[in-house]
Image 1 (tube, helix red, strand yellow):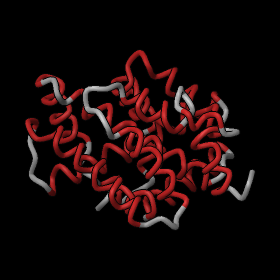
Image 2 (cartoon, rainbow, N blue to C red):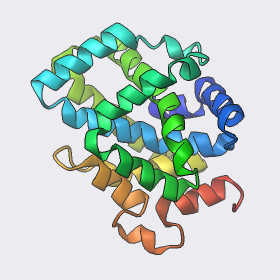
Image 3 (cartoon, rainbow, N blue to C red):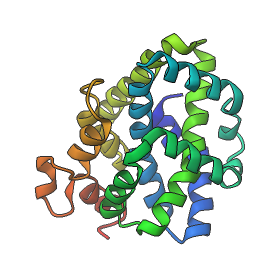
Length: 219
């Protein structure tokens, strides 16, 4: 399953529906947020996995807690929200508040809701990674390549399929964020797409803001 398949499939729609009911945020907005959050989390984990100890810890966490079953039972997302918060604490570390502020400013989701919504999405993202790991029979040493491949494949697919707003978001995200494994994913992805310093921010609303406007009917 590609990252785009995850975003356009039933799991994402079901999780977005849960979040819409719980937080009063539109389903399209939740899916658009996931379209940015998923590659962002994957990029951070790819960077972390360059350290052997981090790769081993991630490998163990995926084996223990993220077998992909959440993709078939989306009700787990809400039940695992607290766990999702812990995942985000580890993935983003000291940059978590910066990530949340940037996403809040550029999606229009209020800062008090962005963290809880991301916490619902995090176990879904980890479940997707865990399922890909199982299917590709990858151990700790291969996680960096697996995660890079997920991003690369999604970027190629998004560029080949131009018509969908989600593809536009993913194409923008991955076009900016993919470049450098040695770089900071926050700067690479949020900088280029969400207006953290890239030229796109000069347009009103910045990269994701303008794409979200199209997705949400010019909101």
